[in-house]
Structures are given as structure tokens and as C-alpha cells.
Length: 117
Image (cartoon, rainbow, N blue to C red; front, side, top):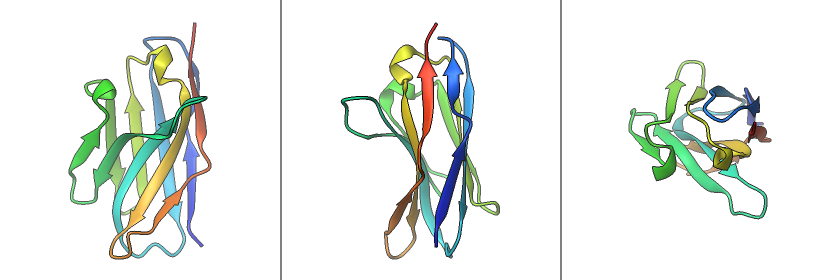
């Protein structure tokens, strides 16, 4: 059974930083991509950043230059360093893993990020 465990969310003031982590465990033989999505109240879930295991990355335009995604393949862990946070970054952040070959994806339980003074 695949499990994704997220950590690192919380309350931060505008301009502050947070680092999210997501550890994947279970029957994951080969991962194609790991990423972070977010969902704000009343809005659809959206891609924030994604990293392919080869190293290529994709970012939502509004977070480029502020957020950095990275991964440790051996530990099956993905990180999201979030700097210069803005109130509009407030959302529940979800970790996502896509399995190579099958394309099956898995989701974490979500971690709340609140940016407020």
C-alpha cells in the first residue's frame, strides 16, 4: 500500500518561508514524477510544482522565483521550499506521486499553509 506523508505546513507571515516535505513509502518500484498541488477554499486543485525523476521541473507561473522543488530519489522524498510567501499562497498543499509505466498517481492527505499577518 502506497503512503505519502507530508509535513512542514503552518502559519507564516507574508514574506516568510516554509519548507514542505513528502515521503513516499510502500509498493513504489519506480516513480516518474513527484509534485505539489494546492487547493484554496472554493477553488480547484492546481499544480504548484512538479519534478520528473530525470530532474526536469515545472512551476506555476505565480510561484516561479519564489518556490523551489527538489527531491531525494533514494529516500523517495520531495521537498518544496517556499520563500516570499503571499496571502494568496494560502491553501491546503497536497503531495502527488506518479508511478512510471502505469501512470497511476497517489495523493497525500494534505498540509495546511496559511500566510497571514
